[in-house]
Length: 414
Image (cartoon, rainbow, N blue to C red; front, side):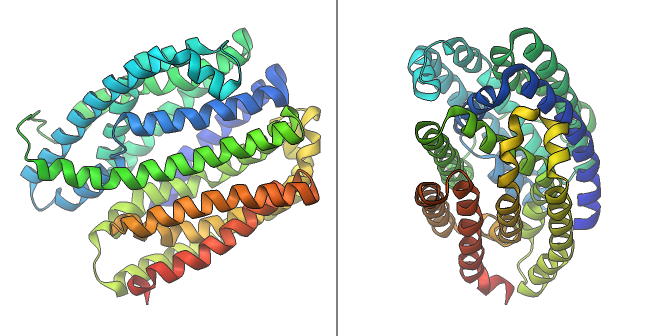
Protein backbone atom coordinates (compact mmCIF):
# COMPACT_ATOMS: atom_id res chain seq x y z
CA UNK A 1 0.00 0.00 0.00
CA UNK A 2 1.46 3.37 -1.03
CA UNK A 3 1.14 6.80 0.55
CA UNK A 4 -1.82 7.78 -1.65
CA UNK A 5 -3.87 4.73 -0.66
CA UNK A 6 -2.92 5.23 2.98
CA UNK A 7 -4.02 8.86 2.68
CA UNK A 8 -7.35 7.85 1.13
CA UNK A 9 -8.09 5.36 3.90
CA UNK A 10 -7.04 7.78 6.60
CA UNK A 11 -9.13 10.37 4.76
CA UNK A 12 -12.25 8.25 5.29
CA UNK A 13 -11.55 8.19 9.03
CA UNK A 14 -10.78 11.89 8.92
CA UNK A 15 -14.08 12.75 7.24
CA UNK A 16 -15.92 10.95 10.02
CA UNK A 17 -13.67 12.60 12.61
CA UNK A 18 -14.28 16.00 11.04
CA UNK A 19 -18.02 15.43 11.05
CA UNK A 20 -17.87 14.43 14.69
CA UNK A 21 -15.59 17.36 15.42
CA UNK A 22 -18.03 19.82 13.85
CA UNK A 23 -20.74 18.75 16.26
CA UNK A 24 -18.40 18.51 19.26
CA UNK A 25 -16.91 21.97 18.63
CA UNK A 26 -20.35 23.49 18.30
CA UNK A 27 -21.60 21.88 21.50
CA UNK A 28 -18.50 22.91 23.46
CA UNK A 29 -18.62 26.46 22.09
CA UNK A 30 -22.31 26.82 22.93
CA UNK A 31 -22.14 25.39 26.44
CA UNK A 32 -18.78 26.54 27.81
CA UNK A 33 -17.57 29.40 25.54
CA UNK A 34 -13.99 30.60 24.88
CA UNK A 35 -12.93 30.34 28.55
CA UNK A 36 -14.04 26.72 28.71
CA UNK A 37 -12.22 25.91 25.47
CA UNK A 38 -9.02 27.31 27.03
CA UNK A 39 -9.45 25.02 30.07
CA UNK A 40 -9.96 22.01 27.82
CA UNK A 41 -6.74 22.91 26.01
CA UNK A 42 -4.89 23.04 29.33
CA UNK A 43 -6.14 19.59 30.30
CA UNK A 44 -5.45 18.03 26.91
CA UNK A 45 -1.81 19.11 27.09
CA UNK A 46 -1.48 17.60 30.56
CA UNK A 47 -3.38 14.48 29.44
CA UNK A 48 -0.98 13.97 26.52
CA UNK A 49 2.05 14.10 28.82
CA UNK A 50 0.56 11.63 31.32
CA UNK A 51 -0.63 9.15 28.68
CA UNK A 52 2.71 9.22 26.85
CA UNK A 53 4.66 8.51 30.02
CA UNK A 54 2.02 5.99 31.12
CA UNK A 55 3.14 3.31 28.68
CA UNK A 56 6.80 4.24 28.65
CA UNK A 57 6.41 6.22 25.41
CA UNK A 58 7.20 3.08 23.43
CA UNK A 59 4.51 3.36 20.75
CA UNK A 60 6.87 4.35 17.96
CA UNK A 61 9.27 1.59 18.97
CA UNK A 62 6.47 -0.98 18.86
CA UNK A 63 5.47 0.17 15.37
CA UNK A 64 9.08 0.12 14.12
CA UNK A 65 10.11 -3.30 15.42
CA UNK A 66 6.83 -5.07 14.66
CA UNK A 67 7.08 -3.74 11.08
CA UNK A 68 10.75 -4.69 10.86
CA UNK A 69 10.40 -8.32 12.03
CA UNK A 70 6.83 -9.22 11.07
CA UNK A 71 7.76 -10.93 7.81
CA UNK A 72 11.27 -12.09 8.68
CA UNK A 73 11.36 -13.23 12.32
CA UNK A 74 8.08 -13.83 14.14
CA UNK A 75 9.84 -14.91 17.34
CA UNK A 76 11.56 -11.53 17.70
CA UNK A 77 8.35 -9.75 16.78
CA UNK A 78 6.48 -11.58 19.55
CA UNK A 79 9.17 -10.75 22.11
CA UNK A 80 8.81 -7.06 21.32
CA UNK A 81 5.03 -7.37 21.69
CA UNK A 82 5.32 -9.10 25.08
CA UNK A 83 7.89 -6.56 26.29
CA UNK A 84 5.63 -3.68 25.28
CA UNK A 85 2.69 -5.01 27.30
CA UNK A 86 4.86 -5.64 30.37
CA UNK A 87 6.31 -2.11 30.21
CA UNK A 88 2.85 -0.56 29.85
CA UNK A 89 1.38 -2.57 32.72
CA UNK A 90 4.10 -1.69 35.21
CA UNK A 91 4.54 2.00 34.39
CA UNK A 92 0.83 2.83 34.09
CA UNK A 93 0.06 1.24 37.46
CA UNK A 94 2.84 3.14 39.23
CA UNK A 95 2.07 6.44 37.51
CA UNK A 96 -1.65 6.01 38.18
CA UNK A 97 -0.97 5.72 41.92
CA UNK A 98 1.12 8.91 41.87
CA UNK A 99 -1.54 10.86 39.95
CA UNK A 100 -4.27 9.69 42.32
CA UNK A 101 -2.30 10.77 45.39
CA UNK A 102 -1.38 14.18 43.95
CA UNK A 103 -4.64 14.89 42.11
CA UNK A 104 -5.28 18.10 44.07
CA UNK A 105 -1.84 19.46 43.26
CA UNK A 106 -2.25 18.62 39.58
CA UNK A 107 -5.61 20.39 39.48
CA UNK A 108 -4.03 23.52 40.97
CA UNK A 109 -1.09 23.33 38.55
CA UNK A 110 -3.20 22.93 35.41
CA UNK A 111 -6.39 24.85 36.24
CA UNK A 112 -5.18 27.14 39.07
CA UNK A 113 -7.99 25.59 41.12
CA UNK A 114 -8.43 22.30 43.00
CA UNK A 115 -12.05 21.97 41.83
CA UNK A 116 -11.13 19.46 39.14
CA UNK A 117 -9.11 16.93 41.18
CA UNK A 118 -11.73 14.23 40.49
CA UNK A 119 -10.90 14.35 36.76
CA UNK A 120 -7.30 13.42 37.56
CA UNK A 121 -8.44 10.59 39.84
CA UNK A 122 -10.56 9.18 37.03
CA UNK A 123 -7.53 9.42 34.73
CA UNK A 124 -5.35 7.66 37.32
CA UNK A 125 -7.87 4.80 37.59
CA UNK A 126 -8.17 4.28 33.84
CA UNK A 127 -4.56 4.96 32.79
CA UNK A 128 -3.74 1.25 32.35
CA UNK A 129 -6.52 0.77 29.78
CA UNK A 130 -5.52 3.93 27.90
CA UNK A 131 -1.90 2.74 27.76
CA UNK A 132 -2.81 -0.75 26.57
CA UNK A 133 -5.02 0.73 23.87
CA UNK A 134 -2.15 2.83 22.53
CA UNK A 135 0.11 -0.25 22.38
CA UNK A 136 -2.52 -2.26 20.49
CA UNK A 137 -2.95 0.57 17.96
CA UNK A 138 0.84 0.75 17.51
CA UNK A 139 0.90 -3.02 16.97
CA UNK A 140 -1.82 -2.81 14.31
CA UNK A 141 0.09 0.04 12.68
CA UNK A 142 3.35 -1.92 12.67
CA UNK A 143 1.61 -4.84 10.96
CA UNK A 144 0.51 -2.30 8.32
CA UNK A 145 -3.12 -3.31 8.82
CA UNK A 146 -4.18 0.17 7.82
CA UNK A 147 -7.82 -0.70 7.21
CA UNK A 148 -8.06 -2.15 10.70
CA UNK A 149 -6.25 0.86 12.14
CA UNK A 150 -8.69 3.19 10.41
CA UNK A 151 -11.67 1.15 11.65
CA UNK A 152 -10.60 1.50 15.29
CA UNK A 153 -10.03 5.22 14.82
CA UNK A 154 -13.52 5.61 13.35
CA UNK A 155 -14.93 3.89 16.44
CA UNK A 156 -12.98 6.37 18.56
CA UNK A 157 -14.46 9.30 16.67
CA UNK A 158 -18.00 8.03 17.11
CA UNK A 159 -17.45 7.34 20.81
CA UNK A 160 -16.01 10.81 21.21
CA UNK A 161 -19.03 12.34 19.51
CA UNK A 162 -21.52 10.53 21.73
CA UNK A 163 -19.78 10.95 25.08
CA UNK A 164 -18.53 14.49 24.58
CA UNK A 165 -21.91 15.71 23.38
CA UNK A 166 -23.91 14.08 26.16
CA UNK A 167 -21.50 14.88 29.00
CA UNK A 168 -20.87 18.48 27.89
CA UNK A 169 -24.58 19.20 27.57
CA UNK A 170 -25.21 17.73 31.00
CA UNK A 171 -22.13 18.78 32.99
CA UNK A 172 -20.56 21.55 30.82
CA UNK A 173 -16.80 21.92 31.54
CA UNK A 174 -16.79 18.88 33.82
CA UNK A 175 -18.38 16.76 31.12
CA UNK A 176 -16.00 17.89 28.40
CA UNK A 177 -12.99 17.07 30.60
CA UNK A 178 -14.30 13.65 31.66
CA UNK A 179 -15.13 12.68 28.09
CA UNK A 180 -11.45 13.10 27.13
CA UNK A 181 -10.56 10.35 29.60
CA UNK A 182 -13.53 8.03 29.22
CA UNK A 183 -13.48 7.82 25.42
CA UNK A 184 -9.86 6.63 25.36
CA UNK A 185 -10.66 4.10 28.09
CA UNK A 186 -13.67 2.62 26.30
CA UNK A 187 -11.75 2.46 23.05
CA UNK A 188 -9.40 -0.10 24.64
CA UNK A 189 -12.19 -2.67 24.85
CA UNK A 190 -12.99 -2.19 21.15
CA UNK A 191 -9.36 -2.37 19.99
CA UNK A 192 -8.71 -5.40 22.22
CA UNK A 193 -11.61 -7.37 20.74
CA UNK A 194 -10.62 -6.36 17.20
CA UNK A 195 -7.01 -7.31 17.88
CA UNK A 196 -7.91 -10.80 19.16
CA UNK A 197 -10.34 -11.58 16.35
CA UNK A 198 -8.66 -10.01 13.31
CA UNK A 199 -4.89 -10.25 13.79
CA UNK A 200 -3.33 -13.57 12.82
CA UNK A 201 -0.80 -13.59 15.64
CA UNK A 202 -0.34 -16.14 18.39
CA UNK A 203 -0.02 -13.95 21.47
CA UNK A 204 2.33 -15.56 23.96
CA UNK A 205 2.72 -13.42 27.04
CA UNK A 206 6.31 -14.16 27.99
CA UNK A 207 7.91 -12.51 31.03
CA UNK A 208 11.34 -13.98 30.31
CA UNK A 209 12.29 -11.42 27.68
CA UNK A 210 16.00 -10.58 27.26
CA UNK A 211 16.88 -7.04 28.38
CA UNK A 212 17.95 -6.02 24.88
CA UNK A 213 14.28 -5.92 23.78
CA UNK A 214 13.37 -3.54 26.58
CA UNK A 215 16.39 -1.38 25.84
CA UNK A 216 15.50 -1.08 22.16
CA UNK A 217 11.91 -0.14 22.94
CA UNK A 218 13.04 2.38 25.53
CA UNK A 219 15.44 3.90 22.99
CA UNK A 220 12.31 5.44 21.45
CA UNK A 221 10.93 6.54 24.82
CA UNK A 222 13.24 9.45 25.24
CA UNK A 223 12.35 10.84 21.81
CA UNK A 224 8.60 10.50 22.37
CA UNK A 225 8.64 11.83 25.94
CA UNK A 226 10.77 14.82 24.99
CA UNK A 227 8.54 15.55 21.98
CA UNK A 228 5.27 15.40 23.93
CA UNK A 229 6.57 17.24 26.98
CA UNK A 230 8.24 19.93 24.87
CA UNK A 231 5.17 20.58 22.74
CA UNK A 232 2.65 20.30 25.59
CA UNK A 233 4.63 22.42 28.03
CA UNK A 234 5.26 25.10 25.43
CA UNK A 235 1.51 25.25 24.71
CA UNK A 236 0.72 25.38 28.43
CA UNK A 237 3.22 28.23 28.87
CA UNK A 238 1.87 30.07 25.82
CA UNK A 239 -1.71 29.68 27.00
CA UNK A 240 -0.77 30.94 30.47
CA UNK A 241 1.07 33.86 28.87
CA UNK A 242 -2.05 34.78 26.89
CA UNK A 243 -4.28 34.44 29.97
CA UNK A 244 -1.96 36.57 32.12
CA UNK A 245 -1.38 39.29 29.51
CA UNK A 246 -4.72 39.33 27.68
CA UNK A 247 -7.57 37.17 29.02
CA UNK A 248 -8.76 33.59 29.27
CA UNK A 249 -11.12 34.28 26.35
CA UNK A 250 -8.12 35.19 24.18
CA UNK A 251 -6.54 31.90 25.17
CA UNK A 252 -9.76 30.26 24.00
CA UNK A 253 -9.49 31.96 20.61
CA UNK A 254 -5.96 30.60 20.14
CA UNK A 255 -7.05 27.13 21.29
CA UNK A 256 -9.91 27.26 18.78
CA UNK A 257 -7.65 28.04 15.81
CA UNK A 258 -5.30 25.30 16.97
CA UNK A 259 -8.23 22.86 17.03
CA UNK A 260 -9.12 23.79 13.45
CA UNK A 261 -5.54 23.12 12.33
CA UNK A 262 -5.49 19.78 14.10
CA UNK A 263 -8.74 18.71 12.50
CA UNK A 264 -7.94 19.43 8.87
CA UNK A 265 -4.33 18.16 9.09
CA UNK A 266 -5.38 14.87 10.67
CA UNK A 267 -5.60 13.22 7.25
CA UNK A 268 -1.87 13.82 6.74
CA UNK A 269 -0.67 13.16 10.28
CA UNK A 270 -2.56 9.86 10.33
CA UNK A 271 -1.01 8.85 7.01
CA UNK A 272 2.43 9.80 8.34
CA UNK A 273 1.97 7.53 11.35
CA UNK A 274 0.28 4.65 9.52
CA UNK A 275 2.37 4.63 6.35
CA UNK A 276 5.61 6.59 6.63
CA UNK A 277 7.01 5.41 9.95
CA UNK A 278 6.86 1.67 9.15
CA UNK A 279 7.87 2.28 5.51
CA UNK A 280 10.87 4.51 6.24
CA UNK A 281 11.93 2.17 9.04
CA UNK A 282 12.32 -0.67 6.54
CA UNK A 283 14.03 1.29 3.75
CA UNK A 284 17.83 1.68 3.75
CA UNK A 285 18.51 2.77 0.17
CA UNK A 286 18.65 6.60 0.00
CA UNK A 287 17.23 6.49 -3.53
CA UNK A 288 14.11 4.67 -2.36
CA UNK A 289 13.78 6.96 0.65
CA UNK A 290 14.02 10.01 -1.59
CA UNK A 291 11.38 8.58 -3.92
CA UNK A 292 8.98 8.03 -1.00
CA UNK A 293 9.51 11.56 0.29
CA UNK A 294 9.08 13.17 -3.13
CA UNK A 295 5.90 11.15 -3.68
CA UNK A 296 4.63 12.45 -0.36
CA UNK A 297 5.38 16.06 -1.24
CA UNK A 298 3.33 15.73 -4.43
CA UNK A 299 0.32 15.12 -2.19
CA UNK A 300 1.16 17.29 0.81
CA UNK A 301 1.96 20.58 -0.93
CA UNK A 302 -1.25 20.93 -2.99
CA UNK A 303 -3.45 19.49 -0.22
CA UNK A 304 -2.26 21.85 2.51
CA UNK A 305 -2.13 24.87 0.21
CA UNK A 306 -5.63 24.40 -1.18
CA UNK A 307 -7.14 23.45 2.18
CA UNK A 308 -5.57 26.39 4.00
CA UNK A 309 -6.47 28.88 1.26
CA UNK A 310 -10.06 27.70 1.13
CA UNK A 311 -10.52 27.93 4.88
CA UNK A 312 -8.89 31.35 5.04
CA UNK A 313 -11.38 32.81 2.57
CA UNK A 314 -14.25 31.01 4.34
CA UNK A 315 -13.07 31.86 7.86
CA UNK A 316 -16.21 33.76 8.86
CA UNK A 317 -18.41 30.86 7.82
CA UNK A 318 -16.13 28.39 9.60
CA UNK A 319 -16.26 30.36 12.84
CA UNK A 320 -20.05 30.48 12.75
CA UNK A 321 -20.28 26.81 11.76
CA UNK A 322 -17.83 25.40 14.31
CA UNK A 323 -18.21 27.88 17.14
CA UNK A 324 -20.39 30.88 18.02
CA UNK A 325 -20.28 34.67 17.46
CA UNK A 326 -18.29 34.90 20.73
CA UNK A 327 -15.31 33.46 18.82
CA UNK A 328 -15.41 36.03 16.01
CA UNK A 329 -12.21 37.85 17.20
CA UNK A 330 -10.19 34.74 16.24
CA UNK A 331 -10.63 35.53 12.51
CA UNK A 332 -7.39 37.55 12.52
CA UNK A 333 -5.45 34.42 13.47
CA UNK A 334 -6.24 32.37 10.36
CA UNK A 335 -3.62 33.63 7.89
CA UNK A 336 -0.43 33.11 9.86
CA UNK A 337 -1.73 29.91 11.46
CA UNK A 338 -2.22 28.32 8.05
CA UNK A 339 1.14 29.58 6.77
CA UNK A 340 2.72 27.86 9.78
CA UNK A 341 0.72 24.69 9.08
CA UNK A 342 2.13 24.58 5.55
CA UNK A 343 5.73 24.73 6.80
CA UNK A 344 4.86 22.28 9.57
CA UNK A 345 3.64 19.54 7.24
CA UNK A 346 6.50 20.04 4.80
CA UNK A 347 8.99 19.63 7.65
CA UNK A 348 7.25 16.70 9.35
CA UNK A 349 7.58 14.48 6.30
CA UNK A 350 11.37 14.76 6.50
CA UNK A 351 11.43 14.82 10.31
CA UNK A 352 9.97 11.31 10.39
CA UNK A 353 13.34 10.12 9.10
CA UNK A 354 14.87 11.04 12.45
CA UNK A 355 12.43 8.70 14.19
CA UNK A 356 12.65 5.91 11.61
CA UNK A 357 16.47 5.95 11.63
CA UNK A 358 16.76 6.40 15.42
CA UNK A 359 18.52 9.77 15.17
CA UNK A 360 17.82 10.30 18.87
CA UNK A 361 20.16 13.19 19.66
CA UNK A 362 19.11 15.22 16.63
CA UNK A 363 15.42 14.61 17.25
CA UNK A 364 15.56 15.52 20.94
CA UNK A 365 17.65 18.63 20.29
CA UNK A 366 15.28 19.98 17.64
CA UNK A 367 12.16 19.26 19.71
CA UNK A 368 13.47 21.10 22.76
CA UNK A 369 15.00 24.02 20.86
CA UNK A 370 11.97 24.71 18.69
CA UNK A 371 9.47 24.31 21.54
CA UNK A 372 11.41 26.95 23.46
CA UNK A 373 11.76 29.10 20.36
CA UNK A 374 7.98 28.99 19.83
CA UNK A 375 7.40 30.28 23.34
CA UNK A 376 10.10 32.98 23.09
CA UNK A 377 8.80 34.17 19.71
CA UNK A 378 5.26 34.23 21.11
CA UNK A 379 6.27 36.43 24.05
CA UNK A 380 8.17 38.83 21.79
CA UNK A 381 5.57 39.04 19.02
CA UNK A 382 2.47 39.21 21.25
CA UNK A 383 4.02 42.11 23.16
CA UNK A 384 4.66 43.85 19.85
CA UNK A 385 1.57 42.90 17.81
CA UNK A 386 -1.05 41.60 20.23
CA UNK A 387 -2.70 38.17 20.03
CA UNK A 388 -1.83 37.76 16.34
CA UNK A 389 1.80 37.42 17.47
CA UNK A 390 1.19 33.84 18.65
CA UNK A 391 0.34 32.64 15.13
CA UNK A 392 3.14 34.72 13.62
CA UNK A 393 5.47 32.89 16.01
CA UNK A 394 3.99 29.57 14.80
CA UNK A 395 4.76 30.41 11.16
CA UNK A 396 8.30 31.65 11.78
CA UNK A 397 9.13 28.75 14.09
CA UNK A 398 8.15 26.06 11.57
CA UNK A 399 9.83 27.83 8.68
CA UNK A 400 13.14 27.70 10.54
CA UNK A 401 12.43 24.12 11.67
CA UNK A 402 11.83 23.01 8.08
CA UNK A 403 15.24 24.30 7.00
CA UNK A 404 17.08 22.82 9.98
CA UNK A 405 15.46 19.37 9.63
CA UNK A 406 16.41 19.23 5.95
CA UNK A 407 20.09 19.77 6.73
CA UNK A 408 20.01 17.21 9.54
CA UNK A 409 18.53 14.45 7.33
CA UNK A 410 20.16 15.39 4.01
CA UNK A 411 22.45 12.34 3.99
CA UNK A 412 19.36 10.12 3.62
CA UNK A 413 17.67 12.10 0.86
CA UNK A 414 20.50 13.44 -1.30
